[in-house]
Image (cartoon, rainbow, N blue to C red; front, side):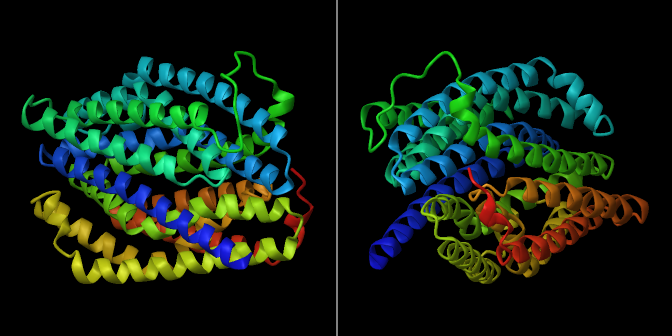
Length: 441
């Protein structure tokens, strides 16, 4: 039995890792391509990404909730409840994504002006175009995430990988064609995103309804039964409030940066792109820890659940350290694939070097550990710590160091690291308490 569980973990980890690698590398390629169009374009993408993180978090939390609940139901053997929760989760995710998408499309111009009015007009123009495409494609991304959560919770690792693989091929092809042949500028990556998200959602929809595993779902219901959805929403709402506040705080920090110049904004976009690649091992554990922790918790074995959380955290730290060493040794020239601007290159090199040192120590316990705690239903605690740490540490120190003491982009990232330290101490110590034992989802 133990060897089977280890095999299940290895296969899940490797497929999720490959899936995330495909997505990250294709996104990096898109960022590299549009960065070649100028620093204002990459700066605009970076600003929009922070806006998207706020709203995408609401929709991603539904997928997180359904993954946790379905995996718990599977652990208990309650397949009927898993089917009902999955079906109604699909419906509510469709409604929510359409509303958010329409809001962002209609109000994107005033939203950008309110948040980033200090940025150059060329940056704002690029951001407006990119925000339109990310918004219109949001419902398709939401469906893909929810479908993926359902399949992973039932032990299916292959169909999400197929969806990501094919969609990213189309993303790269469409983006390159639009840049090199049609000369569409920043719209190129927008068209690539739209096509890839449509394809990925259609592929997972096919597997959900025509190649079901243990969950045979009917067509999505029009009416939402909130009594059935309560276990999912208990996790999703609390988690989304946490994420909205957290990503809203990051958006406020982005507002601080808008007055620091286009070079700083461009470097921040490039560094986010590179750090997403470096974090692939850790972020894979962030995904795998949810179904494994949820299944262990659903079985009622609290000691086993704690061991799962600790092993996932340790694995994330070790894998992150190995990845950072490999990147430092072999990828020192990657910055030049994004830009040849000397100021942007200097910012990027210094920021990533600091990231390579600190991320193996603090990132996993800051972001992977709370994902595991949420899978047990301990979402209110993680939300409280996230909000407190955001305002007391990230926002305050970003302003103090970046704006007040004029350390610029370096002060912004220093505030982020201080935030990580506080989160790590409280989240990791929570695993050893028994307070999450009583969370009955």
